[in-house]
Amino acid sequence: MVTPKFELSKQHYATSSLVIGYALCSSLLAVINKYAITQFNFPGLLTALQYLTSVLGVWVLGKLKLLHHDPFTFDTAKKFFPAAFVFYLAIFTNTNLLRHANVDTFIVFRSLTPLLVAIADTLFRKQPLPSKLTFLSLVIILGGAIGYVMTDSAFTLMAYSWAFAYLITITTEMVYIKHMVTNLGLNTWGFVLYNNLLSLMIAPVFWFLTGEYVDVFSAAESDVSKWVGQTAFLAVALSCLFGLLISFFGFAARKAISATAFTVTGVVNKFLTVAINVLIWDKHASPVGLVCLLFTIVGGILYQQSVTGAVSSSSKESGAPKAMDNGNRKSDSEDEKESGGWRVASGE
Image (cartoon, rainbow, N blue to C red; front, side, top):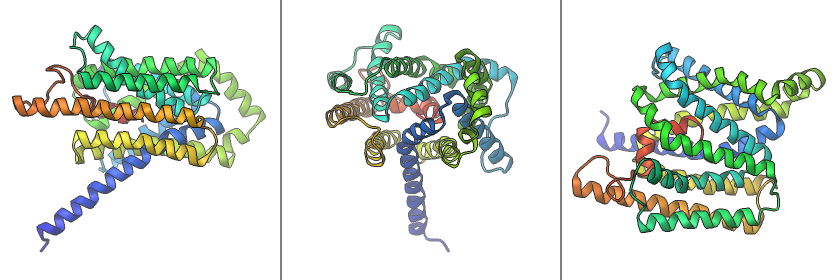
């Protein structure tokens, strides 16, 4: 007979395994994508292979009854298409940012999103201004980002153009798209399937618009090692595999732990990403730039504490399951829960 103590211990280890799996996948993904785009310099094709891997993974696991996803229908696809288009733009700009800049630059611009989301919420969604602690955390994030840019010896117009394009698209996704997607009633693996399948259909359009297809065909004719070389193949395979794994571990961990714990894990992941990036190669910021980067992450921690604290206190007072900062602003963790793991599905 199985004792309750044994069941609790088993559940504890299962939850810990999911959290560790998500932390490793999340912290390694940006570094792996940077490595992949360095070895396989075709961002459009790389992202298409990632989408294809995720679609096939969900389809195969669904056939094996290891997961359940909503069936693909044309009507739902039409409603989902605008969301998938913005998702594609976010991943496309993300990949090109990693192509032209280092991982630290990506983290800095990713950390700026709470500031832009707060501004957009106030201007377009008529939400109240952030609380004093939230505002202070956003100022720290901005200060760290400005300091990083000023000390970035690898600054190039191309890299920062892609960085600003990524910042705009990811902010748009957070403010508007996630709210539209939640009304479709898809389960989490349904989101992954629609997201990646529609993005895979969009990919050929961007190959022609960017002219990447010319580079792809030229490389196929002149340098076969770009396609079947051991290093390039391993880099692309790891990128595709971790893209699928982060969806699995992200969704599973989100269900196993609280939104606050999941948010804390996300913050820790940024520190792990920076540490891994510094240890494995020289494609990282200067010491001063790293200090500024850590400031943006600390600002992110304060921001998460401010919005999570507001949600907790407001929940106790009103007894409502979902509360607002200053009576109206949702925390990032609550928004992520509502979006059905939208950001995890994108590998962000």
